Image (cartoon, rainbow, N blue to C red; front, side, top):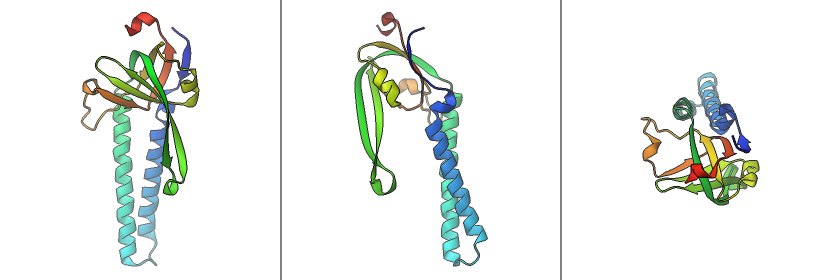
Length: 170
């Protein structure tokens, strides 16, 4: 077993998805409740608020299904050498006022290209052209298609990164 540069529990690996699910379901229930309980609103406003609530609940349920499929399919471990490190900035938040920063470690094999979205601590500890064993949860589609056939994978659910024997990356 090599030097561990990042380790997270499965729940920590899916924290972003779990928070998004809770937010969508909470907003959906709140909107639906507001539509049903506020009788002093015009009928059109109640219908629009109710439809919005149902829409948010539906999106939350779909996201929960995708997350459950990815989580229940189990983790996968690959041995790779990172060939690029990048810091990606993206506008986010209300009206795009704030900036979100993503730390991306990239690796390429003869058949696959990987982008791992990792915390800054793992990004800082990772070195290029060093063999690492990465454990992650592959993104699965609604019909549980195999990600083995995908030539590019963007992965945000990384649970472990550790150094590996260089012969594992040949």
